[in-house]
Length: 484
Image (cartoon, rainbow, N blue to C red; front, side):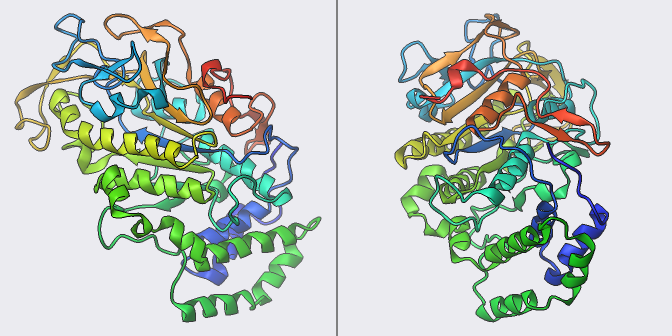
């Protein structure tokens, strides 16, 4: 069971942790982690498993991606047909020809459903298991990425890293184009676990020639020398030690401070983030655009030993309003999906193929999803402005609205059986008619893959109340790792 940080107030801990590193926040985060109390063993597996989450902010249409309904009535079906895949009986949208060729390498879940219809509420439901249906400004519960980062961090204090063969110079949780906000709402975050377990964030477009990740693997040796010199100036830290040292906690404080310095100065860490080290043909295969290079960076990071990588697909590649929220007022839904599909298809298919080609397929689970699907019945609305995938302002165009009653998810790698479909929706794509699955089942599946005892682990919130990491749900049997 976790404990709140004790001793000095949390804000003062953060301020003190940052004193010696000025602009470096990661050192403070590591220092905060060191104050967390030890918890009981929660791992069920010694293999260092990992997860890559690709988040489709706004909610992709399941009918135009992984659950096409070309035989539905006119008011439901879109203009696109369905492609046969390399697995007999599985069809996906004709807009995804690359993914159609490798269906044997992934599994589709077509029966995810919940009742949180707003973007914030739907995101919180899927990412943290929050069962509230009303939108809220920020998370009450930590998302699964944070929980996994927290538990793995505590495990790392007791045991060396397993499975990757790399020193722990990299953070356990990295967000490449972070999954964190929807407009003015915060849709993911550490909540009561505190900022120590927020991700190391990589922002910007990694496809740009001058892109680089700051504060990782500094090349300037004089700068490195000065950082090491600062580590030797212990006067401020000595006073902090006298105030907070309990039961050897300062040894952990030093451990995490050393990890922060390692990230700053490590050549291995710099290389993990450096896409220029990839052959041109590999970068081309993923796509020389933001989504493709985000996925390539995600693969490089898990290969280097990062446990959790979350990356969000949004921005200009989505169309005018920069997300998948294809109401008629935002986008012409069918032009929008046609515009973004090639980027999506190329990036995801390359990531899935690469995970298998590089022998990561048992250890690394790839998940592609958003907060919900889109209304099967086509709606119409007046465009709020012209642009990519949107007609001129005032022109009526087709859209699909929020639809939490049915959503499709893609799973690849992770040692799971692939080339299958779990669940089914009715002929219009409105509701599951077979193997309905909820967000709690989704979260339990992820925790099982990460070796976390989802049914017993509880965390203490800020009021000292024990809170289970999921409130309901069971792992999806079809997504179990072979031999587990």
